[in-house]
Length: 430
Image 1 (cartoon, rainbow, N blue to C red):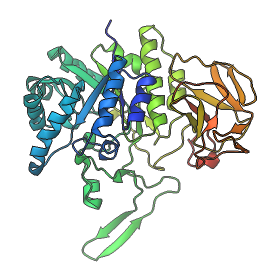
Image 2 (image 1 turned 90 degrees about the vertical axis):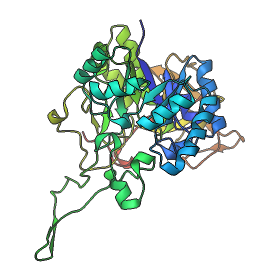
Image 3 (image 1 turned 180 degrees about the horizontal axis):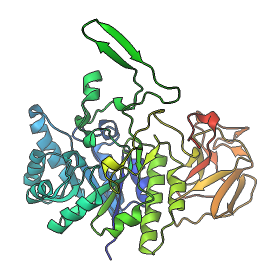
Image 4 (image 1 turned 180 degrees about the vertical axis):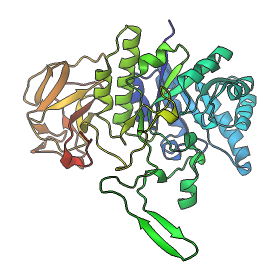
């Protein structure tokens, strides 16, 4: 049986490796301004992107290169050079957003499969057929599409692969068709430089043009002014319904600019959900335990399962971002022998271990610390915070860059976390 693909974001080479190690079948990312995430695109050099592709291929996994920006005429010659250069790296597909770029990529690099970006806003059979006829082998459908419409597309175009978003930031406009940050700061969303102006708080006024009178509209206390702030997508509880449909080829996680912990945790949670599905298991509480640990804007299951007009919980009106249930306290270095501090840590703090699925964690008790299993999860307690330079610390904070010796070896990029509490910042409402 061909399993659905789990596709994760890769904003940097480190995040690429983490996403794959924690369970992704494929990752997507880009180099240069022709990727829709300029901030993350700058993190990749061509050499690093090639290294990432080689890393994935050595593990039987895939990398999709994003060339999904909207180029100006003045950039077309540079775009052609970029397509040819990216093709030489041998990615598993290009992700493109416009008919012109799709046609150009097909002409210049016919050996590279073409995936149509969600920026094209495909929501129906007619549009899907146009792009399929132009050479797209996969369409990343609009976030606003429903499973019912996906079934109609698949029925008409059975050989066309369909990819859907299951987790990550949502845009209050149609899949990024927004000009608010262009208006306010000159940063163009569909050219990779969105300023996320929709996440800001706004004051609302009513003006009378005849009298020149301006009234501030006061809001009820606690309601807030985040009037365009969409909640984050979380379909971790609906993987069974999505896969039962039989029409989804790839489930995608948004977030090339998110943290390494986000890349790891989302990959792990959805890997568990997908693998469980094929074993006839659906343990929603287990998947949400991981996903709820992430910072978020409040969660919604959005529109894939329910129609847009049926949803009244997609906006987060009283805050822009809140803590998840957990705070990352540290991460293991690539060698697996040292702890890199991300939050205040003291001896005897109980740190939950977040490692790739299937990892073998050794239970030890020595002068450095202990590792142990409790309630089906592994934990670490330091007895002493011994730095690589032999200095012993009473406590370490995120600003302390000294690698701390671990009591045993852990898989590369294993994370440690502690329960979040209200003193840490905006906290999830009960």
